[in-house]
Length: 546
Image (cartoon, rainbow, N blue to C red; front, side, top):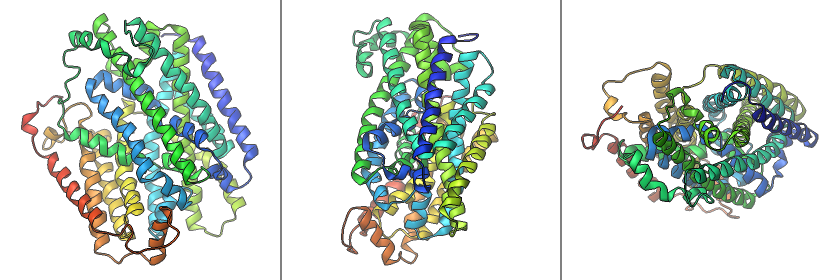
């Protein structure tokens, strides 16, 4: 993969051109603020489900998770299982209830459910930080793609990809983003399934025609070349708890995922779009794991050397070596679709948050026409600023993505779940929980990833691949504890606010006792305390590895 890759350029230009076309097409359908921000709440389940798939299958899936398989072997299976389970959690705990609330964004939901303009503004600030982290990782992936296409430094790909996506998001709003994402999902699904089949067949897997299980009979061969591939306890078990908590509550807390539930026609469409998305995401995740498995086997059996800096390129390296240029072009196009679809969703939520939730809160009498004009200008500024911030990307895509999940899970996921399922959650409790959750997850990110802090006193608790993920096993439980305790000791919400909880669950009448018992918060408190205590136990049983 050196020099200019003509086939890949052709496929990538087609993907970008069609995406931009949908952006301009969406502009024709945009007549008011509701159209621009939530596509007039008119999107059907299949279309919305495909758009959700494209958000889910970001470059984390294409590049970051395959890199983790190469680096952490069996540990990656926990991430795939957790990512898939998280959509089930979103379906059960959040999707239909958020749609019935009829907010535009996560930030609007928090501001209205917890009857506080200040919390809405705080939510916008946290959203911008989380979205920037998520964006930087995906724009870096776009830079890698253009490096493969043109043999140029990643900086050029970051600039080109970031500005092209900014263009069609700015022009088309949510209509353009939705239909672009649906198209990009189809591209991604094809670009994953078929190359994986070809690679598995070339490596001798009899079940190559069904990638999620097709590598099964290769397990003995894998153990022969990589005996420790399936050893699960190279990290403390708390690592798995942290991954589950981070993805389960992170997916509910990530604003660009939640925003998709506000675009559908009703709660039923929200539920079915989540079901459709969960099925496809699970199918793709297991297929990509097969691809990572094949990559580890190929490199180990053939004696191929892959530099640490190239781990995120493993998909391209493997496809190029086994499937050839034509399929590498398809894979590059699929990866590009994954990157720009996620970037588009994030830009959309950032622009919406700034215009609708921040400016709209500070200037509530602003006309819808002025907000619509502001939206396109803000979207352009946000796209340019984030693209420039991405010029110094993280070493590995997955690292920043997991931090984003953890911060969103603690700061947003916890108060949202409690706000839906426990009437007694107060604005003081939610505010305290959001602040504590944000600080206990964001400060470690700054110390570890930006400052380069070597915490010798606690380093024994953070060993292993992505060992810092264990921080999530503390930040999310402590957020639950703070939110519940503060809510108990502060004045309960007004009756009209508590009535919205019944409304979100589809009840036509109001009853005080619904979703207001003590069993749920007490159970959560006990589980949260046990989770935190488990972080500091059993470490002498497991080997410390770097």
